Length: 336
Image (cartoon, rainbow, N blue to C red):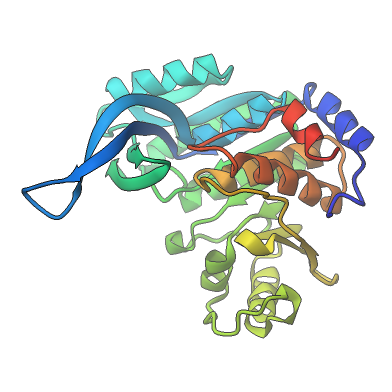
């Protein structure tokens, strides 16, 4: 068990503190659309299954799911991002309201559509995903408007999470502006990166890539995967390169069934084995990791405690279907 350094009483204390914290989430928001059904036959038109739809549901996705995860754990959250003037935006605002997320920072744009990911699910398996989105980078005027809105909220903010899903909101100008706002004020700044964006990620508090992303960030080929990540020479080289190039305070790498790897300059990486008992759906698990880790740090946890905290949170959500959250009761229960 990886909870030997984090007791259930300590978890409860962190969760109590979380209710007093204020976190801003900035980035690419999405609407996750799920179509639930079953398959009984193959189409006569093409060799594909015919899914008879029985129900549908909508959930916040992307940066909106990060905000939803933070709210589920008790934090006070405000979400900043862009949506279209469309039905997707109305549905997203509605589900965010239901989840208790302050969506006052969402700006409706004439030239964008609300990103929607529609997943067809049959017999607990995803059959196909259909994406509708605008992913062109926003212009400088829009970025300045977002930064001004964030700045107005800063006096009582404990942390900011940036959700980059390569949909155009997170630009170099936005990231540099957020860094300039956070560093002199001592505000924690977390980012889940998209290496394809090729942004300068230097000087952040936390970067949370998965295995593939850390290799892309380091510009190193992944060719020596080992059962023990600490013996993986290519992975260790990628970590060293990323820490040297971007100098984050912390680098947290998610490794799926291998768990998590907590890295920082001048210290040996620490492996935290996965807590997942059953894995039904990994959709949004990365959102849960960055949300729960950031919240734990803001509540006073050490980096190791925050890693264990987020590892347990992720272990709960992957056991659910769809983009999911973890409640304080579920999280404390995983430490019992």
